[in-house]
Length: 497
Image (cartoon, rainbow, N blue to C red; front, side, top):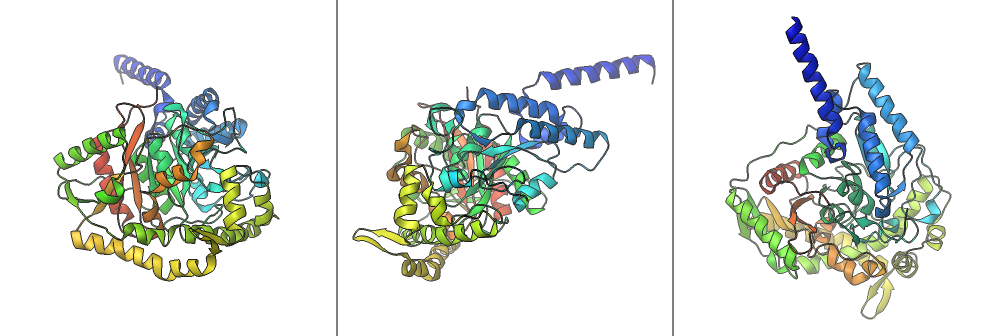
């Protein structure tokens, strides 16, 4: 190489370094960050330092329960050293991700957002956390959550970094970030982390993703291991990858399953079912406006929007929802506490619950094994048995019959009927909970895959609005392909101001 080419190469290298150092590293997505670290354009330490600084600036979001800065930076230095030594780099090498504080990460407390587990420190990773680490990811921190994952508000009276109480939405610090994976949603939305893990029993990864401007995926139950995750219901629980884009969610799904990442398909000829009587009822003005605009764009891109009827959906879901979750909550938590070596009973954990809504649920329903009815409390076991043996199969069949009858590839609807509401004690009230889980609960009880996709910003509130697509059990990859195609049409959301 002559001196002129050497000079040009040096100048270009310098320009690349300057660009890398002046870019906003907190704006990077999971895949983009991994690529830049792999090519040496940025270091894991640089990215980690930028994200830690962002976390410090946003303490008032209450996004974290545990954030060990020294440990995180040491892991980033190790990642950079491994890359410099030419050691094998996984798909997430050097990328900091967050993990909900009910998913075990060895050496970090796993509180599940409740005081009785404040000092419980697992010695091994949950398989889903291990998969991220094996791919080279760094665990940035354990994120805040609704206590014991029993709510959608993130109004956790036991854990917060700064007053006021409750995980806050980065788009409006007075509003909820959703839940129960509240902190993961808030951290990703606030550009404190490019992605991470939540868990989802009935809404818990998709709702916070939507309310904070991101994407969240609930897979077919059993697609990911549920081992070493503080449970509610083995029938309904699953880990859920969350990020700011469907593309990054698909990347995380591939890491968790060991499969190759899916690619976007075409929307031409894709049949999307719309059941208005249930999923589109009672939308606020912003949600209605953004949803209508999104559907119009999808139709223009070649998708076929097909009106469907699911007349038994609400009744069939009601026969399964609370009977399963409230009954399995006792036995599953008892088994988890025993197997994890906590030395605690369900009663001992419940005695220290701080959040009033969760305390009431455990004391009145979970521990005495009761279910509420208009005539008072009744024994849960017979209703649970009926839900498992008859109700859930009937609900699953209703979905299969609907997809078959109308020939649809997916159902589509607004993730939530309204944008995020004000944070505070009222956000944890039962009517608010029921309103936010309405669209997300049936697919959870049926165990089918569901994907929340950013759709737009509400024109009057400035808050994110999302749409959701569901498909049948085992069709996760096809659902992600459709989601990627939808994302290409709708485009990314602007970050919070």
